[in-house]
Length: 262
Ligand code: PEP
Ligand code: MN
Image (tube, rainbow, N blue to C red; front, side, top):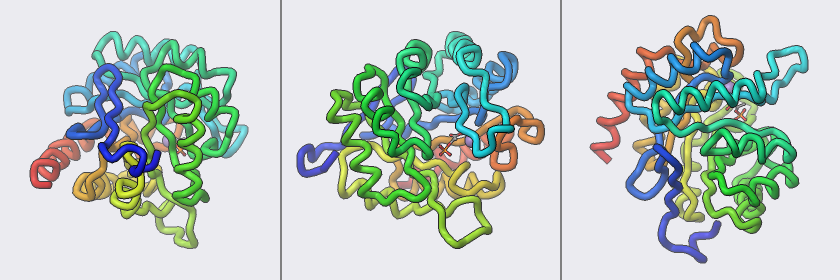
C-alpha cells in the first residue's frame, strides 16, 4: 500500500464506479436493503442526483442480535435488480469468508465493515476475489493497523482496494463517532490507495452529513459513501444518520461546486 512502492495514485474502477485519480466516487444508498421497491427507488433517485454507485447492506453486522440482520441473498438479488434498472455499480458488505464468493456474484464492490477490519480470514478471502474492496477503518484501529489490514488483501493478489475513514471512538459523545478528516491528506501521503470518507457513520446525524461530505471533498477525498433512504424516519437501520433523496440531491449539487473549486 506504500507510496514508496508505487508513487502514482491507484484508481479503482468497477462498472459505473471510478475512485481515485481524477475521479471522485459518490456511493449512496440505504444502510439496509429492505425490499425491492425501496432499493430500486433509492437507486433511481441517487443516480439522478449524480451518484456513481449504489450502496446497500444485505448482510448486516448489528450491535444487538435482536436488531434486523439483513435480507442476505434475497437482498443481494434486489441490489442486482436495482443495478439492472439504473446501471449503478453495487457496493455491499460481506461479513464472513464463506460468503465472499456469493456476494462477488452480485456486487461490484465488497465492503469490509469496521467491525471486521481485523478479521484476517475475511481479508484473505477478499484478497482472492476479483471484486474491488472497500475496507472500512475499525472504530478503535490506528491508521497503521488499517494499512496493514489492506496489505492482507493486496498480498492475496487483489490490487483494487479503497480505504474508508468512517470515524473512530473517542471520549466525545455528541457525535456517534469522531470523524478525522485529516485521515485524507495523511493517508494520501503514505499510500497510493484511494481514500473514501463515510460522513454518515462518522457523525451519526443526518444534519451533519452534507457539511462533512463537502469538507471531505475539499480535503481531497477520492470518494464519499453516504446513507440515503426515501423515508429515513422509517428505515430499518441507521435512519437517524440517513439523508432523504431531496437532501442528497442538494448535497450533491453543493459537492460539485466544492469539487470544481479544489
Ligand atoms: C454500514 O456501512 O452500514 C456499516 C455497518 O458501516 P460500518 O462498518 O462503518 O459501521
Ligand atoms: Mn449503516
